[in-house]
Image (cartoon, rainbow, N blue to C red; front, side):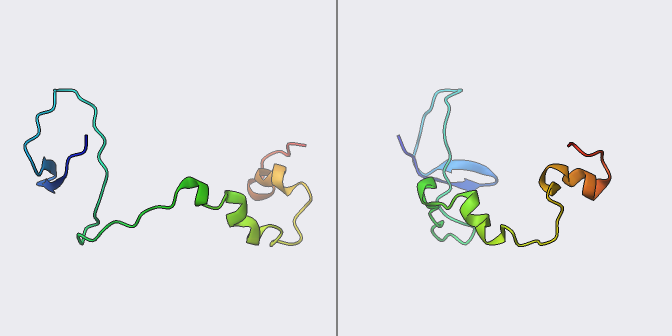
Length: 84
């Protein structure tokens, strides 16, 4: 079932008479932004680039770090004991 509605005084108000049993679980989907325009659709997860693909331009961008920086970054940044 799908019902249309709007917000009044911070509460969801259905555009038609709806009688739902107490405790029924519902899902609220935002259809419009504050200006009343259609909300932009998010691309499906399959179309989003992976974290690797998004960070690829930065891989190897910093030169001159110690070879064990990845595992011992707390040592180099905060003075913690080295892990290895």
